[in-house]
Image (cartoon, rainbow, N blue to C red):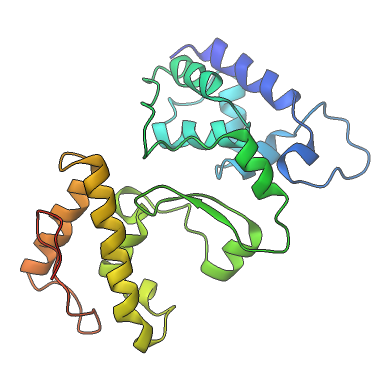
Length: 226
């Protein structure tokens, strides 16, 4: 981890952004060139203290997920994101259908959707970014970790995820979630995160772990459901 290079990179890219670039109001009497530290921290869903320590060359090594959040907050392109990861001593993420990098142009579109709920998901239903209206309607889905980041996993393991839908709609939604997982498995293969999800959900089905209000559905390890 090159702390000096990481700190310099974060400061320079924070300075080049204006509040309007990330969907924030300009406000009055701004002395800071570019975004404030607390604004970047909020956009990256981290504490201001944690972000400040990174800029002061005294923070811990960020995780891959934290670096991906910083890349989105700072509106980095792919090459800039890869450099950020290398400064932090991490391997740059491989490009592919489950990449967690969101292009700055797409983020600018999201920033302008003030009157509609909108969110950006991976093929596994992992929420990468959501606007304020989506957060108010669906709740904050960016704080989940591990397999729980996938809405497919939460649907079959967390009763609260199903309570958002009327009972009559839950079987249809279950089929839709299985179809999403099938498509992801076909695209990514059995050794991917999609394959891991299928294996874990299959095991939970076999153990009769699901609660009584869970739809009568099983997921086989080959990705087929019945």
